[in-house]
Image 1 (cartoon, rainbow, N blue to C red):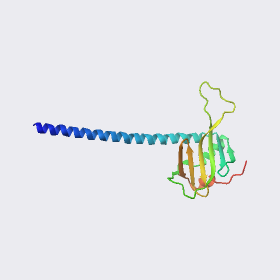
Image 2 (tube, helix red, strand yellow):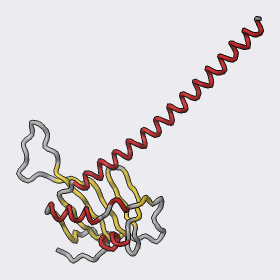
Image 3 (cartoon, rainbow, N blue to C red):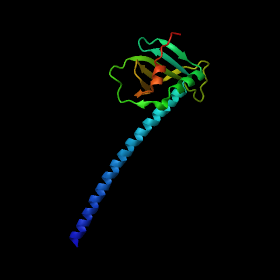
Image 4 (cartoon, rainbow, N blue to C red):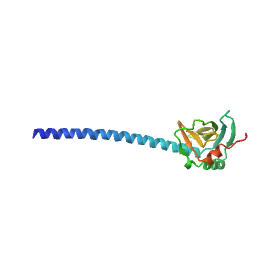
Length: 167
C-alpha cells in the first residue's frame, strides 16, 4: 500500500510539473502573440496618421530638394486613395539594385492639448516617410521607429515614380 501511495504521489508531482511548464510556455506564446498584435495595431494607428496627413512633400532622393507639396485636403485624400494600400505586400528584402528615387514626407499638425491656445499657424511634424525606388515596384515605409519594405502594384509604383517638375 505504501509503494502504491508513493507512486501515486510521484505521479501527481510529475503531472503538476509538466502542467506548470506547459502553462509558462503558453503564457510566453501568448505574450509573443500579444506583442505582435500590439505592433500591428501600432502600425495601423500610424497608417491612420498617414490618412490624416495635412501636408505631403515629395523630395528628390538625390539632393533632398522639395519637388512638390500637397496641402489641400482633397488632393491629399485623392493621393492616399490612389496608393491602393490594400494591394501592398510585405517584402522581406529589397532587390539588391534598388536605388532611391523619391521620398514622400507626410506631416500633421501638433495636437492642441487642454489648456493650450491654438496657434494661428500651427507647426507640423512628420508622421511617416515613404521612399520609392527607380524602376522597381517597391517602397520603404518608415513610421515612428518601424521600417517596412513593401511590394506595391505596378500602377502605384509608376504613379509614385512619375517625374516631378520643381514648383
